[in-house]
Length: 272
Image (tube, rainbow, N blue to C red; front, side):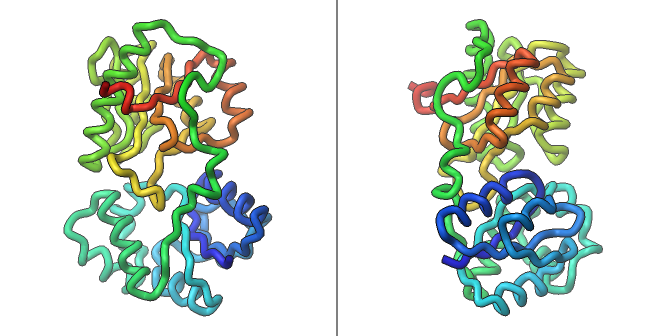
């Protein structure tokens, strides 16, 4: 199958291109200058565009006779909101038509806009199954019971916040919500929580209810751990089978080194 990949930053688009190629697919990537990692070129043909060149993106996929599309990788929400001046006329019209500028609204709008042009967004998760966090302890640092209780408390709060499309991350301590992810993103939220509450916080990250696996699936990686180290956080709690873990071996090594526990929670069991 021929797959068009719209690639943001980070390792996720690279891992998808690699896995899709290994499964016998042909991947063509539209990459964003100064955002997409150049390593994507190892596993895919690439067309580099400036941020906001929506019409060129559409024209490129049509020229390549690509129908099936995947959208992966991070484009900071604040970049979308505060970089309107960089957008072409097609993108400006698209943004002005949205009912609000929530991440979910923008991403669903992008899918709808491109589907109207004849493209079809496929679920990338079959190509990324090896990255999904399983249930249970991910590394070797077993946490104390009080941190597990904080995690269960925080995950429930995070699920409600995610459904409101505010953010996917909540940081708690002693069953108090210390910080909620907003426009600044997960890493700055974690660091802010450390400044507010000191050490031993618990970071909780979840997917939305009825998460559409085609976009905005939660991701954790080395950068998450680095932020937690700065904040002296104790535990990273994520939703099992709804969170991607990047560079797993390096991640586990770092988590062990920093004495940070990482656990995948089945939220259905928490609500029992």
